[in-house]
Length: 153
Image 1 (tube, rainbow, N blue to C red):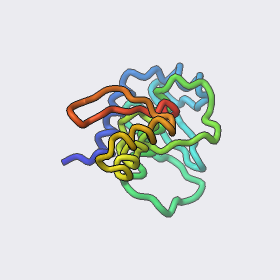
Image 2: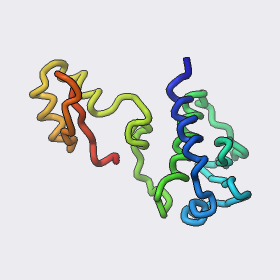
Image 3: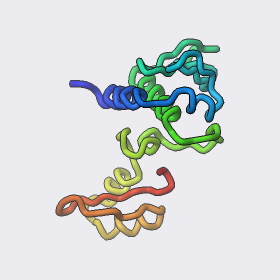
């Protein structure tokens, strides 16, 4: 069975098939090295992003906490950034990976944390969710609700 981080990475690589590398590289001020290939610098590392995938090509120093899951999630985020409509570099405003791509990543989201804290007391969950800025979106099924956190979208 394919792991979630590999599915996400493959999803991003599939989206790169329709990427206009020239436009994205120009807009994000990245080094385009071929028609469908761009270099992106990130925290002392250089990644190659192309229609074939995202690969580490150079690093100023070795990262010691490297795992396969971390590497694939990082590559997915970099590819997703190239695909974004952004026209500036990120500025020290970070969020967890699960919030980056609007639900592609899974993990300890606010809703999951609140759900564990309040258990089956939906009224308390509802109040706490609204207090932290979450917005009720819909009821999926009896007892299952969809909430969004607009700050991370």
